Image (cartoon, rainbow, N blue to C red; front, side, top):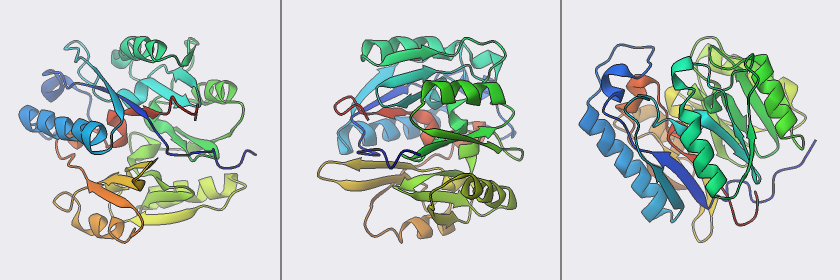
Length: 282
């Protein structure tokens, strides 16, 4: 198996997309809470501002599409590793056209494009956890075995293991990378069971950071010049106990980012950007 990817987390670019007004009423969701559209847009603007101004990434901002209520959640439309972008085939049929703008943007940025055209395959980027060493792919309502196989064919340098996801939308609904070899994982039974499966399937021993709230275990890790380890994570207002756990990461630059509205339509912090490096092909 490949070792830790050189420069893991060393992103230079981010692709994001504006929130359409249709998100409030028409976006897919498992809950029934009402979305405050203006607040959601303000939260998203702050998220983009952190990426662009505080962290200095080159941010490509795609316009909203009112016919695609979920289009802000760009992570599901592409998986980028090295200089290759796999354009996915989202599990929800209403989201399939979201990949068109993403494909155009990543093509323009010079990445090698692989398209998932097999109509029996589904894959949402929210089900793909890349650890820098290997991929874990959640088999969920949105991602199937064929989708995982195509990802494995696309990124042949890395092992790909599948993990059943039953209790929530995506694998990254309860886990993410919080650093090199550090998995942030929710404390629910389902999250801990998934972690156990990942540990059994991997040749590598990962450290774990157990987060009281599953949703808060979704965070965004980067390693940036002059800033070191950076982590975007939940705010104390949303998840006070989970925020306290992140505060123990003394070597990280910690940036709390509010996600109170988008979470109502099952959106998490990683969902709202596609991050990659153009400089070093990592």
